Length: 259
Image 1 (cartoon, rainbow, N blue to C red):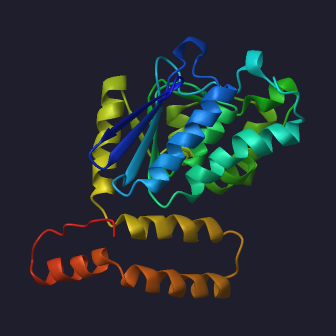
Image 2: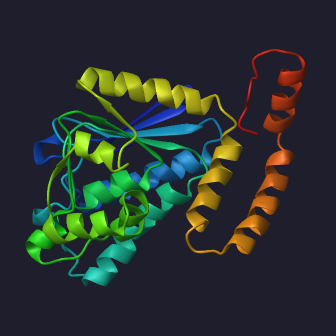
Image 3: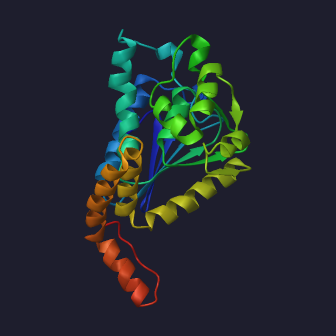
C-alpha cells in the first residue's frame, strides 16, 4: 500500500515507520501524503488504540528533502497548508495516544513531527535540532506551538534562533522527551511495552485528555472548568468507566475496550 513508510498493525497497536533511510527519512511529497493516509486509517480503525511512529535506519527524520522541495512551485504558505499542517493536526487531534520512538536525528520538520506526538522515547544517541534558522527560515509544522509549551519560551527561543543540536539527555532535562533508552533494540522494546499499556487503557478518556490539554493554554479557568464538565460527562457514559467501577468493586483487573 505504501512506498515510503511501513504500516504494521499488531493487535491494537499500529506501528508507522518512516522508510527512506537512504536520505535519513527526509520528507518528500509522497511520504507526507502516505503519512496522512496512514493516520487517517488509524483514526478510522476502531481496533487501533495506540500508534507508534519511528524511523528506519540511523535517523528519525531529517526534515524536508531539499531535492524534492517545492516541485509544484507552491509558496511557502501553500506548501505548509497543503502538505505539512494537515498531518500535524491529524496527529495532535487523533483521539488515540501516539508514541514517537526517536531512533536518531530529528531535525526541522522532523523535530516538529516528534513534538506533535503525545509521548516521546529516544535512543541515547538521538539529536534534536530546530535547523530552520540555518537557512534563514522560522520553525514550522507546529514547532512554535509545541516547543514553548514543552520547554518554556526562553529555551524555545534559544533552540529556534540558534539551531543548536541537543542530545537526548539534554532533551530529557527540558521535558522534550519522556524516556531515554540506550540501544535501538531497547528503543522499540520500550515503545512496544508503552504502546501495549496505552492500548489496554481507557483510550476514549486518553483522547479526551489530549483534547482538553491542547485547549488549556488558550482558555481561561472558567472555560476549562466548563470543558472539563463537558468531557467528563462523555467519559462517564463510556463502557470503560463502567468497567473501571465494576472491576474496582469486584477486586479484579479491568478489561478496558476503548469504548
